[in-house]
Amino acid sequence: MAEKAILLVDDEAIILFALKRALRQRFGSEYLYETALDGNEGLARIGELAASGIEVVLVVTDWLMPGMKGDEFLAIVHERYPCTRLIMITGHADESDLAKLADEVRIDAFLRKPWDPERLFQAVSDSLG
Image 1 (cartoon, helix red, strand yellow):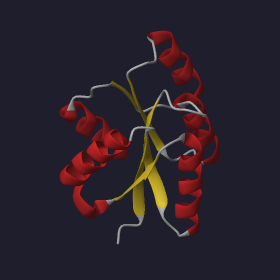
Image 2: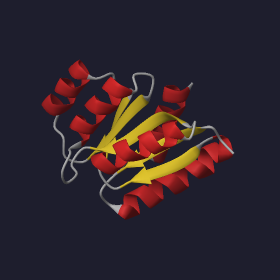
Image 3: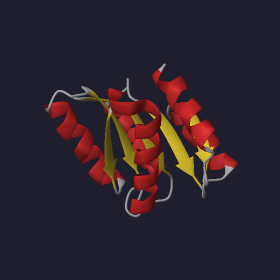
Image 4: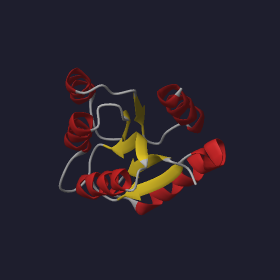
């Protein structure tokens, strides 16, 4: 069983399914692929995994979600787990939103929805490399 996990956070289950499937096909069983439907669930999932001895090495999240937006979620993840790599996938944030987030949090990549699979795979590889 992998001792490292990639957490995918998006409020649309179909997006989570597509991301998880694509990453599993590309990166295989080297990682666990966990999902959450919002930032609060994502934070709880990271805590559960950490308590089980599993390190979340990468978080891939959406920007616009109910409750906690992706930028708020990533800021908390960055504060609590500074070694975790971060990728934002969005169809809603504008350049000024992304620049502000990049000033506050170390983001490894920003991708636009719909994402290009090869750009996603490259961003994940670069983040985990």
